[in-house]
Length: 133
Image (tube, rainbow, N blue to C red; front, side, top):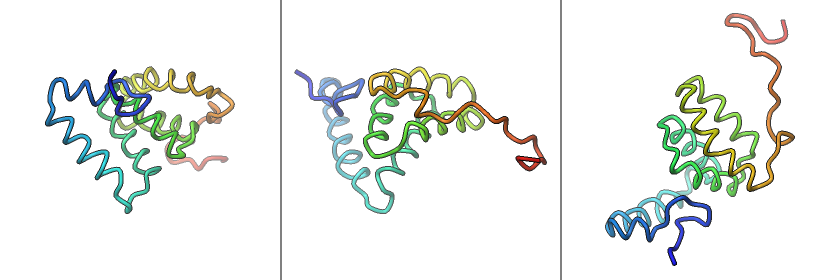
């Protein structure tokens, strides 16, 4: 039986090892054992940055793992929702929609509903207008 990189990952470390043992070792050493253990950037913020980078680059295969990791590290469903929305403007609507496709199943599996997400309104202020004017 394969050992998952995470219990909720689309690919396991054994899958990687079966194709590239060195890549599996580098993944474990450089990413899991080193990068994610560095104290200067807390895991919660590291999760948000990583998720944003994956959305910006449309890397949907890794989003399942890192969205779950973000939730495990205390990033709220509302914050993930806002990251997806924010990235639509900077990384493009198709990338944001790809993130929705990857993350919606995670929200469903964890019982995350609309009551835990930011509401759709109010409309953002027009350029040059202060909100509430």
